[in-house]
Length: 128
Image 1: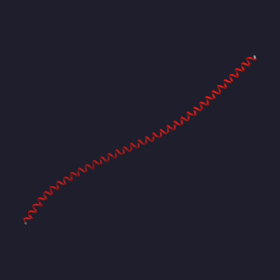
Image 2: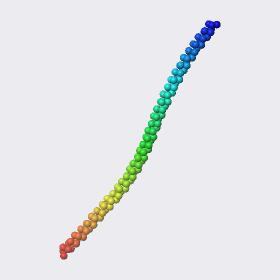
Image 3: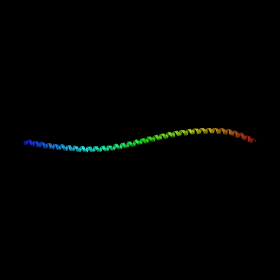
Image 4: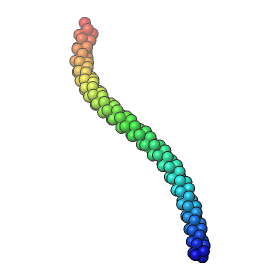
């Protein structure tokens, strides 16, 4: 029986050694997993920081686009106002030109009739 007890003890020692090896392997796996989890968490934080930056940049770009569109609308409105004002000024200029030409025609006809009067007056005065 001593042989079987010795064999049982040897088998028990071998099992204990194997359990220690498995325990060491499990401990190593736990350490690796912990290290990987820390790296993943750090990557998540870095990724979140990038997401926050991108979100902030997108908000700034949206605001810039909104301002640009508002400015474009204001410029279009101002251009329209200036075009309308220009059109009105051209109409006034055309009316003024026509009035001026009519006045010149009237002045020319008056001066012709006046020169006829002046000439006949001059003649009658010279005769006297």
